Amino acid sequence: MKKLTFFIYLNIVLAMLFSLLCISFHADISLAAFPLALLFTLLLSYILIVRLLRTEGNIKLAGIRRALQYEPFVFISAFVMQRAGQSAIPFWLDLAGALVWVALVVVSFVLQFLLGERSFPALGRWTEIPVEKPSFSNFANAVRRVGIELLEWVDALVWGMFMIMLLNIFLFQLYEIPSESMVPAFLIKDRVFVFKTFAGPKFPLSSVALPYIQHYKRGDIVVFRNPHYSSERKDELKSFLSQFVFMLTLTLVRTNTDENGELKADPLVKRVVGLPGEQLMLMDGKLYVRTAETGEFREEAADSSWAAWNLNEQPASIKAKIEWLPVSSEEYQDTLAVEADRRALDLVAARAECESLAVRFAALARGGAADAETVRSLIPAEQLQFIKTYSFTYNIFDGYTGISDGHLVREGGISDVALKLLSADGGSQWFTDFMTGWYGGLGELGSYTESGAVTGSHLVGGDLYQDSLFRLNVMVKLAAGRLILRHAELFLGGSADGATLNDEELFRLYGEARKLTSYIFDMDQRNMPVFPANDADGNPSYIPSFCYFMMGDNRYNSLDMRHSYSKRFMPLFAQDEYSMGYYTNIEAQYVERSRILGRAGLRFWPPSRFALLGRG
Image 1 (cartoon, rainbow, N blue to C red):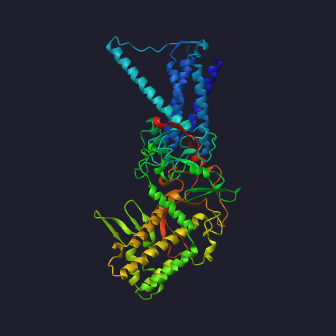
Image 2 (cartoon, rainbow, N blue to C red; image 1 turned 30 degrees about the vertical axis):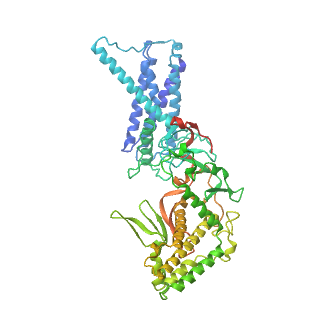
Image 3 (cartoon, helix red, strand yellow; image 1 turned 180 degrees about the horizontal axis):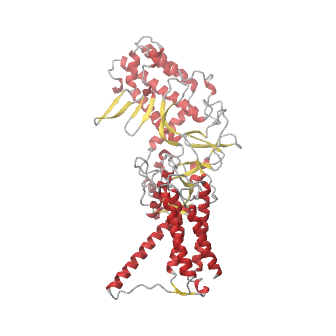
């Protein structure tokens, strides 16, 4: 009896203290937190002291037990309500509120145990009056019986809602896969179970969290908050409420939208591929890693065991469920061929061919000389850019292709470039500058090679990624130069439009050029520069402690931590005034451990895909 009395008064004191911590002086929703907590505290005081401690003999315990069961939910609601206001809450107040709430939960459970069916008889002071439901003997009793049944259903529903909320915050999360970024590990509509307790879950809308015990290794599949979205208070509140609805509906209803009404890609599920203390680079589909201890980049072979590049090679049972195959087997083989050609590119031979093409075109050109400014303005800069959207493509080979008044239009292609350079003053000069401007200042070209270490002076730019962009620029120039010269030859041979001739050589050159441009359009999914970037003195930088880098397994169809949500223009080789350029969204970032919700441990739906999730 003394133990029960002690815990009852301790519960009341903690409830009163928590209510005081909920006081707010701001004219917003936070103002309602204190009245909610205080009213429930007064109700508890009445139930536990007046109705329980001051009563002897027969007593109805059902209502008392139910009030104790609701106690954690009511006070966590007040906690959230206070932090849903417009003003930030000091950390000390967050911490105090969280600690008192945890204490309340423990004391509430102790009281529920002491007043439970097994422990209660030992107290010897009361006799529990069983709850009896009215019979259906008359209409009034029937109405009362139905009313009681409805209230019990509502009570069970509300209690279940709160329990789901607490489980979601502190124990586990159910997550539905919304995209194909993790094929074949996850397909759209797969559902996974994420255990959160060891991942330091935070109290809602606060910076207070449980101790972080979970440690992540390369290959772990994790669920985390998307760092691309704002984490302001109003956004966090909306995310919290939407996640509550999501869990309440067993992952069926998603309400977390952005300012445009589009569903947010938040949280994300990706695989950990970069660890604290590492520097990364992705080239030709291979992940390279170095640390301060290793000093040099080394290929991380484990990454190839889960990275999916050619989904056409998946088993028929998986392939049939994939909604979109980013590349065909033929396109993937073209990718490998372009990369092989780039690695094998002989820069000395490339320079000789560029100079030869320039000399041969000059012999055909009909225009005169021009000043430097006129020469530079002959070909608009956008024709040296690779652009690809859902509605059009634009590059020096195909020109502009798009839709106008429901019809396909095409203009400004390389045949037009050839005709203009052939006849305009300064055309030969532009072509010469375009073909030869890339090697100025590089010294002995024979010293550059992509065989060997992935960093060093044998690579233009100092690493394999920068060198690859430089070589792609050279390859594009060679492809463009060959086509321009061939078009010029056909024009001078009497063709009104060299692009429409049945010329096998022209078709072969276009085929090679389009493989190259297709590669450039998709290379942001295939490659990633050194990350984190070296400092201003060229010294390596590494992923900080408690931070990780994630990518999706379906690398051609994953907007992950390699990318931003917007694109910017970048030349392939900035030192070349006539460099080809492309629009890139490469902007790698790591994810702080505090944003990770937990490790995905179980794929539980559909039943046919039930599996424990390991590494790799």
